[in-house]
Image 1 (cartoon, helix red, strand yellow):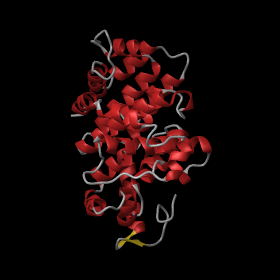
Image 2: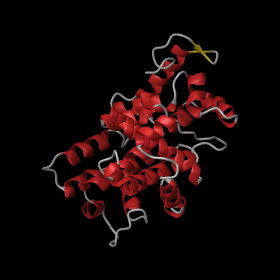
Image 3: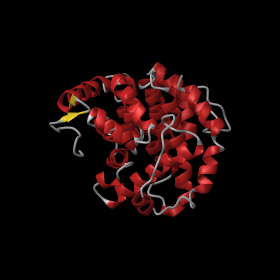
Image 4: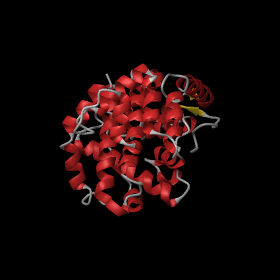
Length: 300
């Protein structure tokens, strides 16, 4: 944890950091008990990781959660997945999709359900980042730090989950961050000042409690500061997600209105990219507006 984060004994923005940290711990304890994420998701992920699991059986588990199954069915029939055949049951949908898209489908539906009170702009930004990361992974080809485009989608989807949690569960502190952001201070710097922790750190703590993969936890934690990552592979993934975040701002999908997104030279170097090399991907992301908006509507 960076200085000023969890465990610091100091005053931040006039608030005792210990008090803020205790509140954050309380929020996390409450959040992980909400339905669908993590209990149903953890079970489904375990099944997806088991080579002996059958897709119809995974579909049956999803179908046992009425809210999750409804979200999943609406998502699988959306333009994003572009299936030739419409699915009229969750079990059929899972068979049509396959393992990796199913994991993304369930995570997306679970995030929508668990964070359904989140601000629409943040959800739109998260879905744009998921779409952008998918496009970036395809653009990078063999040089991509992700196993495939479906893995990249998951990284983009969850990179700002800490910001959504702050907006929903720390509204007073969050409101104090907004003026600083519109005055040219980055969101994560303003969050550190007001709360003693930024959304990347909080998101990583949440991802760890959700028992997500180490690489994903590190990418969430380091997408603004890649020095937080503990090895080169993690830094490269975090850098790619940091650039994806920047692409969202360039393409018109900001997480916060009036905020600016900057990318340090070290991030471009770690990802092996330049603003010029990703310009075609930014354009593709701009042209994905209808798809992103459709997915946002499914979060309602």
